[in-house]
Image (tube, rainbow, N blue to C red; front, side, top):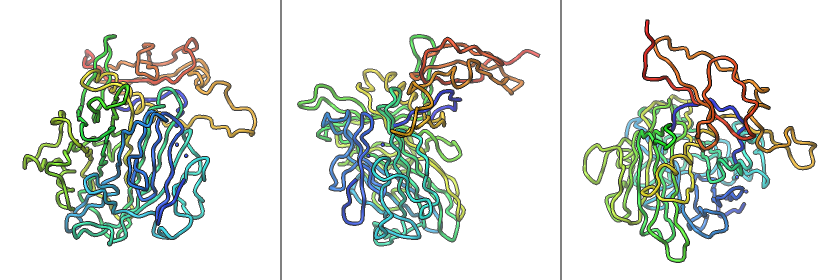
Length: 443
C-alpha cells in the first residue's frame, strides 16, 4: 500500500478458458504476463498444479508457481480458510456462491473476450463494465467443510475476486487482484486477518531469494523520493539457459481501513512452516514460528532455497453481511533488489499509483464507431481542458508541497493551489502528489 495520491489521467490497466473437474480456469495474456486464473481462488497455477505465471510472455520463464487468499478469524475457536496453501498445495475454497456451487454451469471464470460479463441477474455483485484491457471475475467460498484441513471448519466466507491487467506502458508488467471478502455467517467474525500467500518458484525453484522493504522511502538522484508501505521481492540465482533473471514484486495497494501490512514473512519449504488453522492464524498476526516470538517483518531472507511468502493485514471485525476489500499488485521487473532496489520500487509505485487513479479509460469495442480519443493515452489537458484546479491544503497548521508526476513517478511540475496551466504537457499518464511539509506555518 502506498500513500494516497490524486490521479489525473485515464487508467489503462490491462486480462483471456478451460475446465477441469469442478473448476474453471482461464489465462491472462494481454500484457507481458501469462497468468493462470482458477475460479476456486488459486492464482498463478495451472489446473494441473504446475507453475502458471510466465514472464515475459512467450519467454517460457516461469516466475509464479501459485498464490492465493488467506482469511483468519476467532469467532469462538481459531479458524482459517485458505484458497491456496503454498506448503501443501491444498485449496479450502470452492467455486460459486450460496445460490449455486461448482455444478452450476454459470459458475466459472469470466474473462473479457472469452465470456464477459457475468450475468447480472445471476451474479448481482459481478461487474458489468470493465476497467482494464482484460478484466476477469469469479466468486468462491469456504462453505464446504470437507475441503478444510486439520479439523478446520468453514467461517461462512463469500469471496468476489476481480483481476485486472493492461497493455499501457506504465503497467504492462503488472497484474492487479482485488478480493472482496463477505461474512455470510449468522454471527460476527472478530479479529479478522486477510493474507496473500505466494510461492514464487523462479525457474528451478530451489535457488530463490527474498528481500522485503517495510515503510521505506526510496531516494532518487533528482532529489525527490517515493514511499512504499510494503514491498516483497522474490528473485533467483542465475538460471541455466536464461539470459537474465528478474524479480517478481508483490505489494498491498489497498487494505481494510488503510491499516497497512501486519506481517511480511518468508518461509523455507524445508524449515518450520504453518500447518493447521492455529499456526496459520498466528503467522498472519506476525508471529515467527521459526524463532518462537512475535517478529512480523522479514526484510532479509536466508540462503537461496525453495521459498514462500505471506503478507497479511488486520485485525478488524466483520459483522454478518459486512465485507472488506484487499487489493494486491504483482509486478515483474528485469533486475534484482540487491542490485537496483529503486528500479523495482519505481515499477511497483507506478503500478499502485495507476490503480489508485480510479479512472476507467475510454473503452471502445471494435466496429462500434470512432474512439473518444485518437490517442490511447489522452493528455492531461484533454481531461482538465488545459487547466488543472487544485484546492488549498486544508490543515491550517502545516504547509503542503504539490508535484505533478509522470507515470514513472518523475517530477514534472511544481503545482500551486488554484489554476495551473498544463497545456504544454505531452500525452501520457500523470499524477498529483500532495504531501504536508515538515515546516509549520508561523502565526
